[in-house]
Image 1: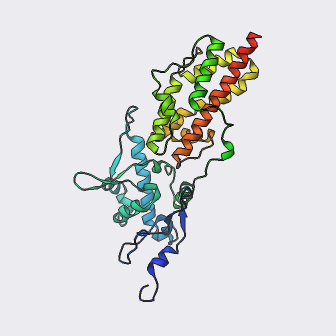
Image 2 (image 1 turned 90 degrees about the vertical axis):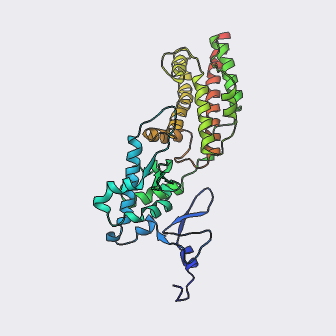
Image 3 (image 1 turned 45 degrees about the vertical axis):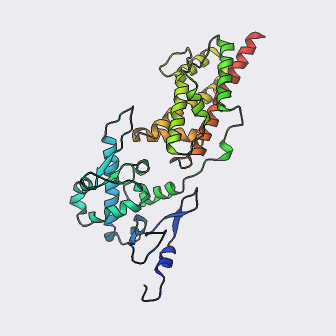
Length: 335
């Protein structure tokens, strides 16, 4: 191309890219290369999106990548789950090569480059003590767990890189902040039932829920604190989980006209645990997607601050809905 007077950097930059919807920065296209400081001597290669335009007989490398991606998800599903710790899962590429050798002998050598430049496997490169390349299982891989063909992968990839944003109109009406909403619910609970609803060992959980979350780790910490707050509920209804007992007590002791509002509020509170669990374990990822939808959020989460703010707002709204029904019943009994 240089001999023909073409600017290789300009040619590569002319390929269409899929931007991240939350930044607008081009991140993925049919070719991969160093976009930051391009050197004509630096490596250039095709991504799976680029390989999809090749004749079928030349798409073997993309098929191998999908096979390895499926194996990574299989290893994750087969790995033991520790409910008290999250251990990283690193798989040697040599092991993946061994599993695929019968169908992919000619294309395995390309996989480190392909893995490094596909959004599904970004950021997973690591190595063992003996220098063997490994790939760490990441949350992004869960999004592609059911993908088994190149068209399905590209469809999922488009959705992943351009996730639908939450609808601002789906946010609840403005109410009190989280701590005040919880305290108000506890106060009217005493008024109606003669005992406190919320008993926490300290104020740390509520304080954490009132803080913001700008990273995945902070998001998980806020959700964990919210789960602890809900576990601190002490209703008198039957059931194992406090929120289940809360629903049972309210449906039993409040009038039928309040039941629809109660069920709607409790449904939001019950969605908190699946969202938190889905961030850590693939086995419940589908349930987590459904739970996020109840808050008007899409999977995967990309804006942690917005997601946590939305969940906290809806939780405060649920507290307010329950508070209003409990308070209305308490007043009717006083009149």
